[in-house]
Length: 224
Image 1: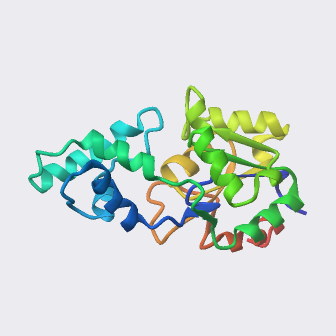
Image 2 (image 1 turned 120 degrees about the vertical axis):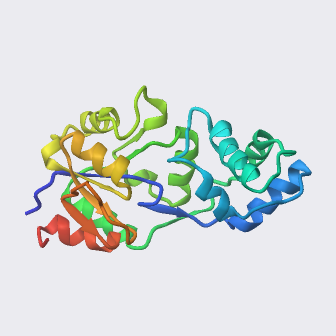
């Protein structure tokens, strides 16, 4: 018998990952704005601070372009114009289920209701869920960007628990970040299975550490 009555998942980097060609998208940003290209996609991702700011995505990506421009002495560019172009080119249908996700969802459904708690905005995240074909498998989806507080605050988790009618100590949360998923889930009273990517948990102590979502069925069976 499982220790849990329900399972909640994070979405980006946990259940799904992007398949869009970032190099092509990055080149098109400069084509669209008429700017002379500089840097690479990895340079931009490295220049961004924290997860996307869904209240001000133009400002968030603009800050990344501004940092890159300063590093490369390109003070002639308009970082906000580059950010707007980037946002217009992101295709949320170009996502795929993460390795092991199907097995993880199957095992979670044997335990009880399954839901998603994501910090992303409803329009973008619903598109991703539809693209990976799991919308009908979810009993609830909570979009942190639509709430007064997002992860790691407890509000998104509380909303999901209320919707499912389950207790926090009987619910497992599966996510890939320590700062938002582990911290948020544990603050809300849930056990957390952390899907790591070779990094160290640092000061955080997730109840379970997964190399892949394919490890989740053994956790739900109580084998680990």
